Image (cartoon, rainbow, N blue to C red; front, side, top):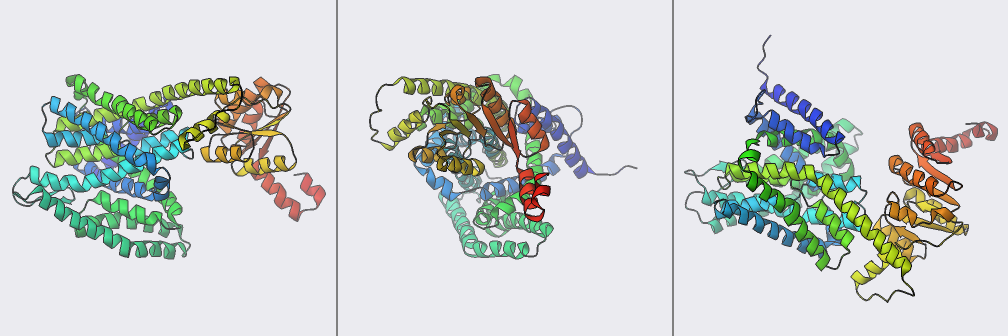
Length: 583
């Protein structure tokens, strides 16, 4: 029996191929996003074999854009941005201006118009939220000062892109008209002959009206709806409410205020982020957001013509150099000029050395408005795929260079005679603290505590009260600084790095306690500790029997499984003492 099922074919083939290629990409340590884009290329019109329905793919991509922007709004934190506003705001603006200028220069060299060059350069100036957050999470940098700066920088870039998605259609309607009033996508553009300033003014009024409505009405109604549904106790209804709010506000913004679906979704997420239920809303909407985000990247891949790599190798190389080196060098110089350590500058540079979802949205908008040639979209897609593919390699190189610099700093600090000169500026004080927390320890017969989070802080406080000599290895900047200021010896960095673990003088230590929850990383630390001191007692934590076996196989003497200890505590209260001890 034959069925006309283009929608089902597009979804099934798109998701299935994305799953296979995303898994392969992950296997080779590349972001799965690369696999999703390549899946789109394979089912697109520029490659042989099955060709998915482009119109349906574009509509699915619109849903993906709405949910992506809703997610960006949910994770928008004004508090995080304000904590690093001194570097993130000017740094992001200057870096975007430099990258846009480089992109404009390349566009003019290719013979494009000024407006095409500006859209092209702007698309090359903004990093991918998905790729950046994943890279920081893998390296446990989200909660560090470097991670906060990178995320704050990203927030400023995202806000700039949201503004661009509002302004560009208004300008595009003046530059590229096709007779009469027209609508491109979901954005109302100008009538022929209308001035840029009039178009911008009308667009601005509509945006102000939408923002005012969301702040006055949405800020009260949206949290009230969610709290009401949450009290019903139905997880299914709560999940449905979150999705209905995201999609409904986005569509209402486009239909009632003539602003983009993306802007409407962003504001829905941002308003929801202020609610006490924001974390739950993000968690419940994540599966569908991820699924449609995959379809978005697949649909973007369908637009890419692989022949571009062969027909325009020099422009592709130019785009890649702007993304990987132009943006990164600009960010590195800016961070250094603001007085931050080289290690922070390197992390920020690596984080921004790629482009992603906003670049795709902007490229498609530019082509739809007639402001950007299709060649420009192909070059942006090529640059995105290649830069995302190279980003883990770039991070690896930065990690190696940062490790070498940390070793030099530790050696220099250990060899320095006499007290350090009193620091004067905030940057000097930060650098002095970093150097103090990188010195090789001279403690002996001591306990080394790795991690000072929820578990480690309880252990550390008990060791302090018992007057047991100990030092802490901690990679979260705020915690390390507080420990240092409170007179507790701390080595600032990731204990999995050889230079950091060796600074703890494990050869003379009595005990190693690994209190971090990541069993894979903990096993590497345990193995390094056992190699440094075969007679030292090593204690670690785990969350499953498999983790217990894994840690023991790497040299741990005692492994505490949290769930088992909780069960023992409960049974100690309800069973006789002899029976409880046998558990």
